[in-house]
Amino acid sequence: MAVKPPGRPGQRKRTRKAIVDAAMALLARGGTPSVDEVAKYAEVSRRTVYLYFPTFDQLLIDATLGALSQAGVDRAIEGDAGGSTVEDRVERAVRALMHMTPDVERLGRALIRLTVDPQPGRPVQRRGYRRIEWIESALAPWRDRLDGASWLRLVCALAMVTGWEALIVQRDVCGLSPREGEELSVWVARAILRETLKDMESGASDAKRRRRPRSVGGG
Image 1 (tube, rainbow, N blue to C red):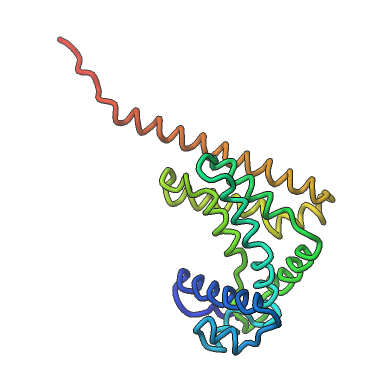
Image 2: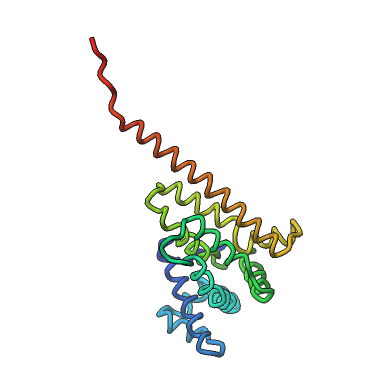
């Protein structure tokens, strides 16, 4: 039976991020860090590193992918500050996530192989934390316009059409070229945003009707 690292989901997410960020920072200095170096930098134990990453290769691949992707996606989301619509921000994020060099794609496929088939006695592995954070960042201007369930549905829907899993379907199942796959992800993301916008407008109209005072009938 697979085991889960201790703590609440939010705490586990923060711990995992701290470990990956530590590995990224050490890789940026040049050379390959050791498990002990990553643990010390992240201020966790060696055992904790292995709770989240059963193999050190998995951690190094995850950190390398983060280092290769972080700045580009962040720049794409922010774009021209100020005047960007949510639709613009999401499209730029999707294009940045789906526009991968062959080397990055190979690393992504390797990471999936290491996490998609959990082994008995090893921790349950989660992927895609950075993807979720990027999507939430792109959608930030809509955060206060959606309730919790609607927000989660939108974020998850966009996560389904971007990233490694979508790329593998596009390449291996549909036989699309990288360019065709990128355009498909953008098209689906736009459709999801249109439906969400329609739901928001419909909800606002319903709320307005409920607030409208009823006229008093004359005798």
